[in-house]
Image 1 (tube, rainbow, N blue to C red):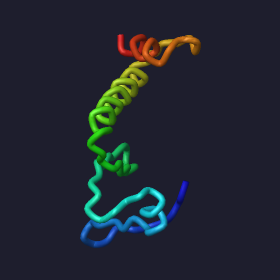
Image 2 (image 1 turned 60 degrees about the vertical axis):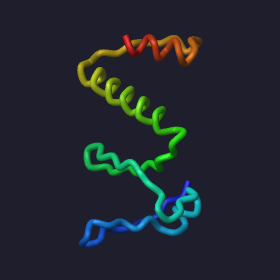
Image 3 (image 1 turned 90 degrees about the horizontal axis):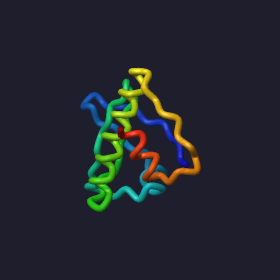
Length: 91
């Protein structure tokens, strides 16, 4: 994983350092989804084939965080399949 430091311009622009762009395969005109989670900004490249799955994952994470905040949780047996655990958690 590459790590670098950058800053925001007066126009609100952030430069992604070249070593990070190269490592991630980011080219000019690459589009991103931008998330703000309690002041932590996350950029995720938009790839058509993964967009639907990404949005579903975001929904699951948000529901899980809501449930955790409401002290609702489930203990899942690790021998279950990922699908079984998802079903259990989404009840």
